[in-house]
Length: 315
Ligand code: GLU
Image 1: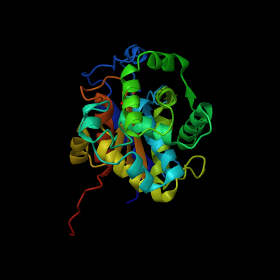
Image 2: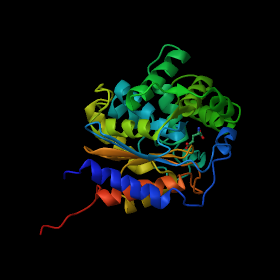
Image 3: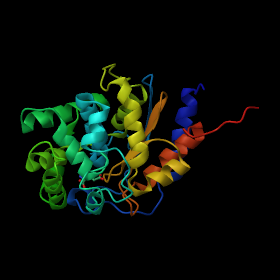
Image 4: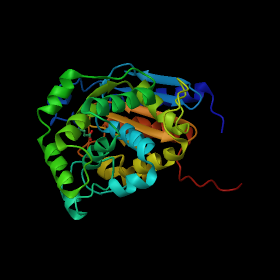
């Protein structure tokens, strides 16, 4: 299906106009930095697999990547280890529970089950092949930069805000360590995981990251080969199962695209082989997904006719 640039820009403009002023939700407040971000911010971008970029609103405003970083680290862990090792060492099934659930661990012999919940993401960070803490961190940061096609930087203020409040994640790391699902020292794993959540990016950069996966692992802006082609489908499947927290099922049921959101208010949906749609607005629903972001991204997908499970009748 050919879409003209005007069709894509119009779909974005409509989504932004209809939902940018939507009320409801609240900024994440368990990380002090996030509580203080301007709740009115709202941005939307599309990047296509041939490198076209479309945007509306605050698409150049940097925001916290948070949980969306889990997709980048999963991609790097897959490049390092391949598909089977991720299944064995972390697991790839939906937990059906909140992203930081300890009960989900207890129910599965402390196996994290998914690299897109906190436990599995801390485990994935610990799996990255590295000979020191700084080497581990630099490889993860480089992957974020390669996927987004920008020079991604950590926010020292956000990192400080997280490092001084991440006690629950530290407890999770020790549980994983005790059960043999952590592959470096717990302190190093949580430190690096917390840093990976504390980088800033724009919706343009986020959409570029999604378009890189949509394009089979080649960044359409820089042409760099970032993820092995064979792993992109697995990453998208994992996003479908666990990317939208406890409402991943609702999202698949209604929108039908692999997606990942973060408590910084970002959300990324991928149309395999075609494009990625990225939204940002800080107020979250009680589950942790951006209220405006979900509506804007769903609107663009629906206007352009993208749903992976769509069954067109022969006419
Ligand atoms: N840094 C956050 C945490 O570990 C990320 C959570 C998220 O965005 O889901 O709790």
